[in-house]
Each structure stands twice: as C-alpha cells, then as structure tokens.
Image (cartoon, rainbow, N blue to C red; front, side, top):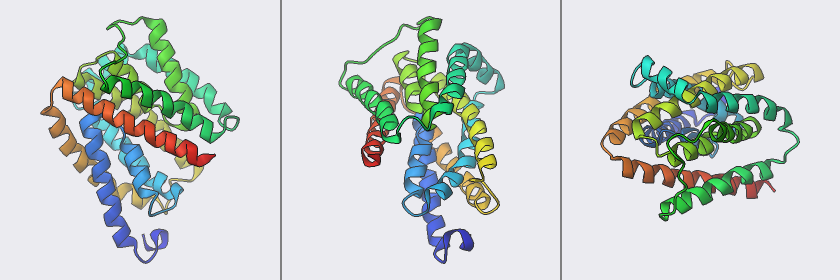
Length: 257
C-alpha cells in the first residue's frame, strides 16, 4: 500500500474504509448509488484510476449478495420477469460502447443527469410518472435501450433503471433484488473489462480486496434499515438518492466543459 498510496497510506486507508462503509449503507437502504458514493469519496484522496480499481471488487461482491438475498430461485425469477429490459439494454450497450469517443463527456453526463433529476424532483413533489404494472414489451424494451445506451457510453445505467422500477411502483424487496441482478451482471463485465485494461492489477488489487469487508458491513447495516422501512418511505428515499445522483452527474457535466 505504501508504494501505491504513499507514506500516509494508513490514514488514507482508514478514510477509504469509512467511504466504503457509507457506500454500502446507502446501497443497502435503496439498492444503488454505492459506486457514486465510493468513487466520489476515494477520488478526493487518490488518483481516479486507483479509486476506480478500489471500487471494482466491493461492487461485484455486494451486488451478488443483494441479488441472492432471497435465494437463487427468486433471483432467477426476477431475471426472467425483466428479461426484455435486460436483453434490450445489453444489446444497445454493446452498440453504444462503440461510439463513446464521439459524444463529449460533458454532453453525455448532462443527458443522463438532467432527466433523472427532473423525474425524481417531480415525483418527490407529488407529481410522479407512473407506468402500468404491465407496460408491455415495447415500453420495457425502450427503457432498457435508454439504460443500455447510457451504460455503454458512460458506465452509468443505474438511474434510468431505478427510474423505471420506481415508475412501475415495484415492491421494495423485488426492486432491491432486481437491481442486484442487473448491477451484478454489469459488475461482472466491469471486472473483466478493467482486468484487461490494467486498471485492476497487482498494485491495485490489495486496495480493492481490502474494501470488500467494509462495504459488506455497510451493506448489512443498510439491509437492516431497509427491512424496517415501509414502501412509501423506501420510495421517497430512492427518489431522494436519485435527485442527488442527478445533481452529481450535472455537476460533473458542467465541470467537464
């Protein structure tokens, strides 16, 4: 760690563990936003590529736990239920990833952040967008395509996914499980991609491994809190985190100009 983080590595690691706990806690309560919390926190004290490497394994393990919390059968059921969304999202993700260099980063971030922020803001103000319980394959495929498009060009497909699940008024346990399944599949791809890219390497692997337990500890606390809140409060907390996520994306977009 000394070679990676310098002489103050122990102090930096204590800070990193605290950030991982916070990220896990938020994820445990609402099901998403751990990457946003962890990458934002770690990037304040270490290079962005090192921060990204640190995030990879905690993200993978926490999503597996979230997806399988009610068992393999329940996870497979959610996978089957949202298969149109997933297949559409993955297909578009593969295509949009090829045009990532064409779209300016600032435009990309604003395209994601502004709609998410507006959607969540209106919902919190009592004017939510609601979809019927069975919106049809075209609507589901369309939302999956939007999520996949942004996922391919930016790695950010959480907010569109959560917006869809919230608009469908998905029950909180199922929403948590579906998010775990979707993000878990993405985390597997992320791990493979950044192992190949060299971001996750011999130097950064110990950092990523060391953040797994703190992240899982925070996730465990978040799960306990999430089990004790009702559907209405869960929805409002989810929308509040979506607003924060949208604001963060807009901030990054503006700063990228």
